[in-house]
Amino acid sequence: MYDYHTHTNFSDDGDVEMKDMVQTAYNKGIFEIAITDHYDPDYPDKAFPFLLNFEEYHKTLENIRKQFKDKIKVIKGIEIGIQHGTTMKKISEAVNSYNYDFVLGSFHCAEGFELYGENFFKGRSVEESYEAFYRYMFDCLDQYKDYDVLSHFNIIDRYSSYVAKPSLYMDIVESILKKIIYDGKGIEINTSSFRYGMGERTTPAQEILQLYKDLGGEIITTGSDAHEMSYIGHMLDYAQHMIKSVGLKYITTFENRKPTFIKLPD
Image (cartoon, rainbow, N blue to C red; front, side, top):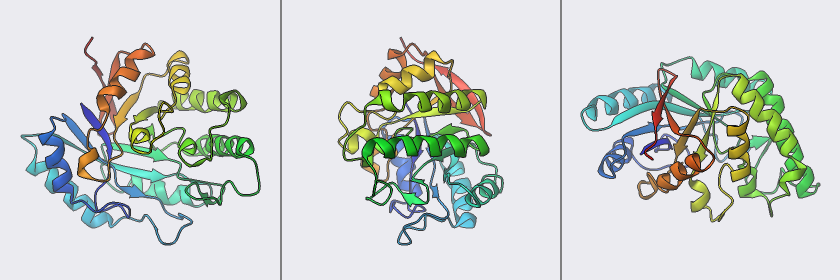
């Protein structure tokens, strides 16, 4: 198993030491763990600035990688929050300030509002909100390219009062996926959907994953999005099942921001 989305106490919403997260992954038989703590500058909720102490973060990544080098492969990662305007310059500078192995690009906000809560959805229908979210994602990814994998593609499903009919926005989703593939990027299967009680509405949703494959997408990682030790590796076996269910045969790992394809067992 490969867990390529995890958070430690370097993230504002995490409180577990990096050493403990990696040790837990090793104990659970995880082959590789990517530490991808949050850097989400200009996050609207000032109670959660999602800034990183980069000096300490990089130092700890190096130390933990050495400490566990004979046990488990530790991938030096980061999760950046993509937003329009000057945020793009900030996250690009952060990405290029250190020799990361892996960069997750995420949309936790849109149009200057956090998705968590009601601000983004206020004053418009759910259907209008979905269209606005995916158009915002498209516009940002048209400009910003410095990431490796786009995380939790349909994160809006987690926060909306209900899931809008896919037929209303799949044309925009298709345009986004084409852009991701053309740019040589990938997507992840993020198993936090089970933790959030989303039921069969996985992240990405099955129809999005299938479309990604049908359009020629090949780069795909799996991640628990764990913020605590108990969720390390959670449902990654199901994530591999999803990958195979759409006709893909490989999972992707990263080192020095270069993808490697690992064949899944039959």
